[in-house]
Image (tube, rainbow, N blue to C red; front, side, top):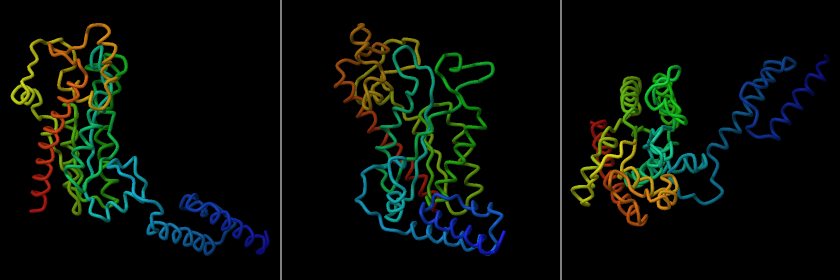
Length: 306
């Protein structure tokens, strides 16, 4: 092939690269054997220069009001971090059986409400996407919740690897405090393990596992502060506290209408009807859980700074 044709090939590649900004993966031009090393280097330098320019470009529209990273644009995340948002919360839920009324995503629905209120009350904090898949029992020979259809389980090592990767991604972007909270008891060990390993590995960020989020004493709060006592045990993986928290997000996920129609609108002896009353209880319970968790996060961050 003539030198002129080789130059034409390089020019076409450069035009294509410019026409689709940032769409060409780094290293793609290196796969073209018709380019000289100098041409590949020049093209990649121009590509990297465009990325560098975009990373500092001005956001063209006003900020969207959200603390969920998945709902924000990358520019919004960047600008919030520049304004002091240096805390990222990784919450873990689960997909598991929860009896005949409550959706398998119980913990994830609770976290939709609690992570948001925790981040907003804490200040300078964003919520990473909820880690919805967690260990729920053995898979090949199903055990625990895995004996029930709909449950999805991860191996413990998979779960911990996911947490490590998510936390490390957030740290790579500049978050200084990575907070782990879990809505299911089976998640506690993995979060504690990962937080400990990250703190051994990192010297420019801190991982914080907050077990008090899970062990918040919801039943005691309901009884001592609101006078609500579960007088029965229905023997299913559910409680009035959990149901009330879920209803603050979406009453359909506890099958509220269907239970009212069937005359089954109660759990462990406590009525969940009328819905407005149960949602009011759920909001109070969420506020209590939020305040406790925020207090423990602040204490952990203060200890990390000493």
